[in-house]
Image (cartoon, rainbow, N blue to C red; front, side, top):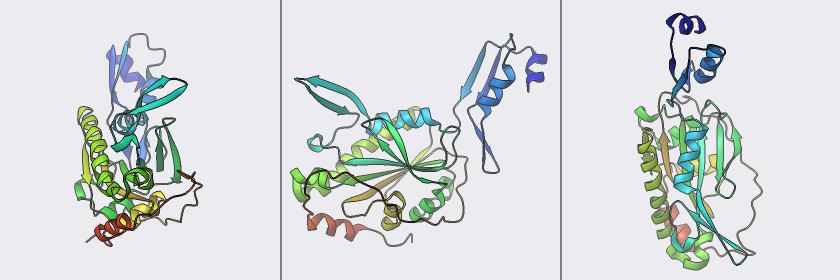
Length: 266
């Protein structure tokens, strides 16, 4: 590559940030950087973000479920989110399931708006499990990234009681609108799916389906076929801080969610 760049007298090199071959990530930008090192004629390296990278995912998380502003007044801090939520209670959580990306290992992650970070819950490529649970259309089984949106019901129900179940989808829909707009502006292919085997998706991200439950999936990007086999998914034993000293479970929320849950992908 270096010989070609030098012999052509190129002043600029255009490349993708990454690509895939036989399921392996090719970090094209790093290859180009090494090739042009010390080549005085090259003035610019222009990068086309073909594969969603960490910077792209950060932008999508920020504009969908991130904290965009913090108001400090009277010794207190009030955080403002990119999308509004009933009562400013922000009960919708965001998880990410991905294959190997240029700067993010394959795994299942939770997005923390409070510190703008991803925390790895599982290592490995579990997109095959997600595609099976969602009966994903064939043309979207090559999405390198899937986002999973959940609601932690009590964080809204302490104020709104059983009405929270309506708010779960109302607030999640507002966040999804932001996400899809950001994906469209970045020319990232996307597909929203709201029908899936609830227990399988909940188990994958480590939630119980009663206190916290998956509401929607979004496939992002293309060109990276998901594994055809489903991985073994052991139960996650995660320590979770309680939202309050005690919680009240509203039977109507549990009943409505179980009544609308799918038990198989057919």
